[in-house]
Figure 1 (cartoon, rainbow, N blue to C red):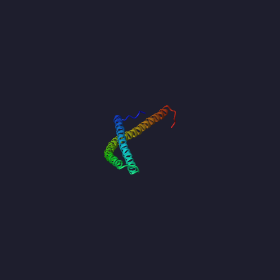
Figure 2 (cartoon, helix red, strand yellow; figure 1 turned 180 degrees about the horizontal axis):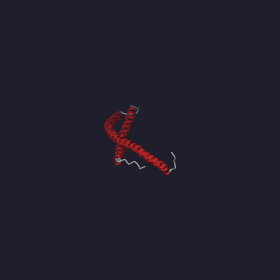
Figure 3 (cartoon, rainbow, N blue to C red; figure 1 turned 90 degrees about the vertical axis):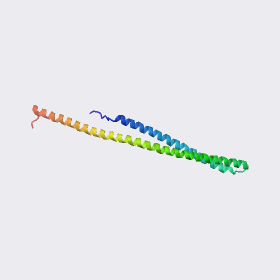
Length: 151
């Protein structure tokens, strides 16, 4: 039996490659968002620690003012990181959409390949059965003609 050959194999490989590339881009976008979220968490922890330490014993008014300025800077940093996180989330959603489209395109072609392969194997099995039947009926006919069988 001949091997199955899918005529759109190059297109399928190209779509698989595109899907992998978009998956990598999605991973990069998610990684960037995760790093920003971790920076936000670290900033919040740092602010909470500084706020708790601000009114500890032994600090002067100028030290407390310095803590207030530091807390304001941490709040500004958190606000900036929050805006970056929103942009990164938007990039993740865009990358996810592109990945889903590429995945859908690849799946369509994969399904076509599977369906054609099943049809091919079904056809080849039927052809093989015909050939075997022809051989078997031909052998019986030859035996009948040569007199080996007496019907």
